[in-house]
Length: 175
Image (cartoon, rainbow, N blue to C red; front, side):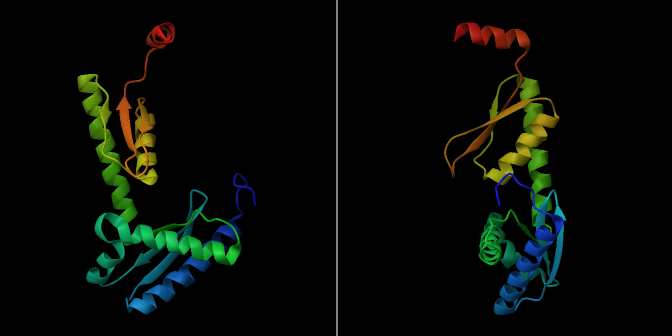
């Protein structure tokens, strides 16, 4: 399937089912109790692990989400092995990604306020592509500009004012 072709809802649900089976197997291996919730959001299959035991669930998130990121990568590989196609599956543990999105949204708004107050561009700390996308989306919604710089894993976002039409013309003349 070409990358730009959209998958059907049945294909996305199949990916979520495969992922849920894989994650249930992992939970059995580590002897964690947990429920698996599946769905499709923004044309991507999603699987959420919800556990009763806060201690166990913290191990599935890890420091700075490292474990949940690894679980997502492993689960995507398991889905690809079964379907033969790359998956853009999202794995979340106990709402970690929702909380992370909210923190990044708040950080982006704080940086936007700083740029508006000072007029100077602001660089954020290095982020992964998921985090950078959230920041870029918030910045765009607020009518400002952002750009990613650097090389992975030290890639970061700079937030700045949109240039006015007159400034853009000046910049082109100077080039």
